Image (cartoon, rainbow, N blue to C red; front, side, top):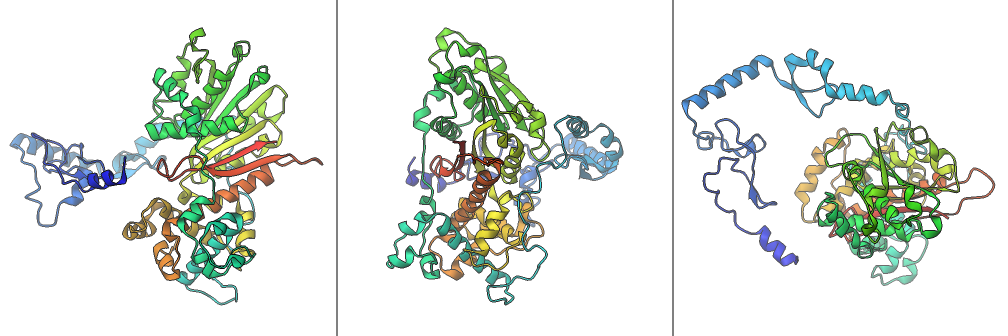
Length: 544
């Protein structure tokens, strides 16, 4: 779809209300339809859109109702008042309860029973994967100092961090400067780049620092098999991402060939959700097996803290196979699935999956994850520290997401960050508050540079940023005159966070404790275009 047609749709006038419309009267411009929620009692808007009622227009926005309905509304309101206010459940704040029923509810809350059951499992170890890796930096020093030891203001510090981000980014990804249209080539390739050179780095330069390797076309056959098995894998964009990630798994030799028929194959999906990536990967491995090896099913382990609908298990356990499916791209009938229901912060992988603690010549295991949000990627990587070093895991492929939800205390790349920013970045001190500034700037990578108001609202009112004072990224970009804009600077922050993770993989996961080092290939790439998803970075690590 062309951008022109998209703009025309966005500018389309608001249609008239459908005839006999008894739902909410709020119009959603993004979805180009009216809200389908039931309106609040005696109103034309639902509870989510009552804020649209202008002051002084209450009577005009009321929905006419008869005497019987009005009487029911009054009676229900009286019952609510008798029960007290609705408050978040102290055990699971995701649902609300009446204040008067608090004492009774905590005894029967399903979340309490579920938590008790989870904590009783053998592999549950409170906080075993939290804490990240490395020094916490200068958190004890609340004063922000520049390189000369002078105390700086919040804005000045933010400007220093922005320039440090570009310096470190160009050092880590040197092709960024090589692609930039800079007149002074000698300076562009020198060890220390001037601020003027950095300010000319564009958003395109930052994006192209990572290669875009979209392998979805090589796995187009899985779309037919997903439709055949009626697997709800999501829309076309989700399917495109699954195909490309599977293509990278295959390209890096993590799907066995005919020579590996006698090996036992395992796939572990971290933060699995419904488990679609695990289903596709394990089924593709099953399809690659010959008939002789098909008697040994591919083991799929889904690690996820909460339940969900439409899980992969349902399709896998009901799948049947015969000779007519030998040429299929996916074989669900050759997969055996298990779900480990536990938060990644607390799951002890070597206890949950004891076969990973010992390397076997006949055992091959890979770890996959798609859009593992924020600190979830760090928790997942740390959970692998024991099982990977045993040699049982042959590789991992992880698509990162939601960098704005990362935390300094759980980030596994702290040593890498401190070394780069204190050295190449020229920042004398680097603390958790500085990391919070950078991870908040990552949200600009999915916003338009013209959307200054929205970005300011994110900075000021994001529920994940309580207690963190942050400078608006667009103000910093304007003050410094950066050619990359807010989106470019935000994307640079994202890639540096991911780069720290690749260094953790290289130094602490695929790392030999003995005399002979382990050959490891760790890389970052864009596995699809940003039009498919702006969160398109993929970490690939494989044992040599």
